[in-house]
Amino acid sequence: MTTKLGVWDVIKSVIAALFGVQSEQNRQRDFAQDSPAAYIVIGVVMIGVFVATLLAIVGMIT
Image (cartoon, rainbow, N blue to C red; front, side, top):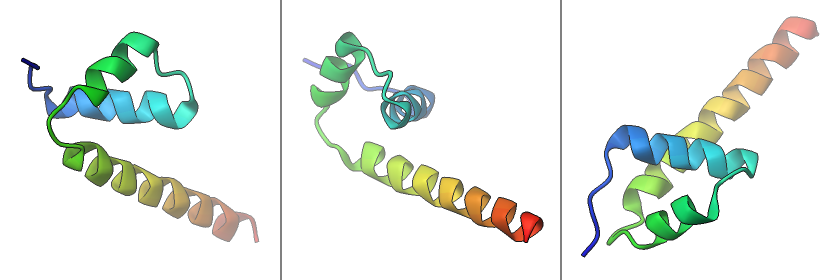
């Protein structure tokens, strides 16, 4: 039986995975979850924020 993770736990896991510093223990915990939907949604949102930030920085520079 797996424990449900909160939104903050999912956000921290996605951030760690994006930076490549996800621990093996947390990765195992994440893959034991029933549905990957929360990780996918938060991952897409975070990538969108990252791209928007880069575009804003480039827009300010040029």
